Image: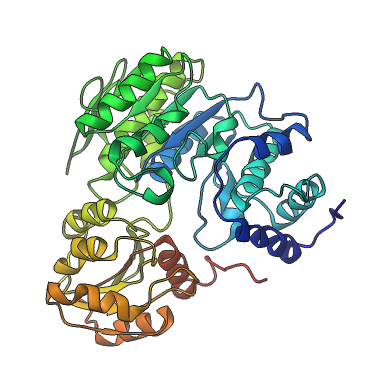
Length: 432
């Protein structure tokens, strides 16, 4: 039996040591951990959110609207940008270091050393125990990978969400879109409504089949609910709500789609006895915050940080940047994980840039800057290599004029490290 009075650095060291067990799908270890704590997730109210992109944005929007309605709202997300405790928030406030250390110690004490859990399994259990102890009214749970065998799938939600689906994690989820859709549709529960923004016909058919098999109502964006997002704001037409002139607090035209999904979730929750007024919905959408997503962190020159890390996300950001910000030149600082489709990622954002600085965050899975530069060579943009992200940001600031925009992207790890370098008081990283 492990001692459970760990310090915060000790807790992080123990938790991160579990990453050596990699990614293992299945629900049994998470269920066993929770059973040792009396199954604290049973009988509680959850929203379960899967998808390739937009999970965190949708969750933060729903959370902000529910919070304005007077509820205590938990949000479990991954990965974190800067600090481990960001993964567990209640009404926008992250878990304290002391609580994290205590919970980690308690859970480590019940781990069977013959069958150790993965990092994500034990961290998911931490979230569920924490939200139960804090007696949150609703907990928003973001899927880590896939859905069907993801550790978060032990919950019984009021509503499920699949934001969108594109090719990702193919070594784990399958080579085809339909395979990935089948894994994500594994969060569909009997009789539980699903809200989704999927668009590809084979994906729609696969998700519809899962809903049909589970007798789960399916609310699809573009069919059952509709939206329009212009300079005048967001207009939404749902099953019960008709709203005009909504302001979305997150920049980027693609956030209109995420907001529409969030509003559809609010309609389902209202039908399940968790209502919010129109004023609370409006205020919640307007005041939503989700760091590292097209976030303006400095001016003269403007510096925007975004955690986009796959082709679809970068494509959306590339379309949104010229509309959201005025600039003469775009200087791109990019660091990408080695396991991503690097040429496809670069193809979406490098052509928009006037100059590119290829770099890497201080993370083991980061691709070498030289690899990025070679992959981007056919795109014909001028650029250079900076060995570290700190050096890349320094170089970008030196060559940028006040009318230029420095855009930092390619990975959530790149975004997180950039925030800690650009605003160290607000985004102070963990020290182990």
